[in-house]
Length: 60
Image 1 (cartoon, helix red, strand yellow):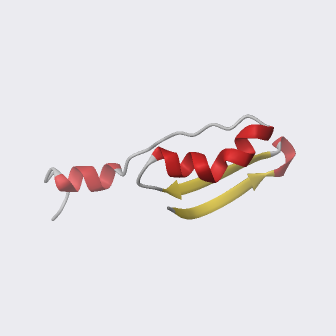
Image 2: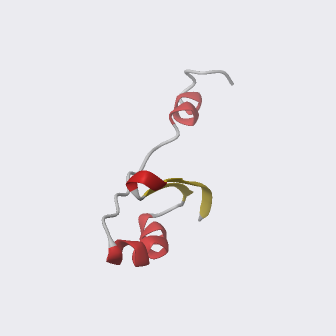
């Protein structure tokens, strides 16, 4: 797992993190302490550019 970046919006007391991980269990383990003290939202995303390249739709 790799943390790619963390940004905070202090007025709203929110943090935003981009994490690269091979499975959801690793993300859950990393965020477990935050999940216990407040609302935590995890949104899995895909690399759409890589997917399109893999299908031969963008460049080589």
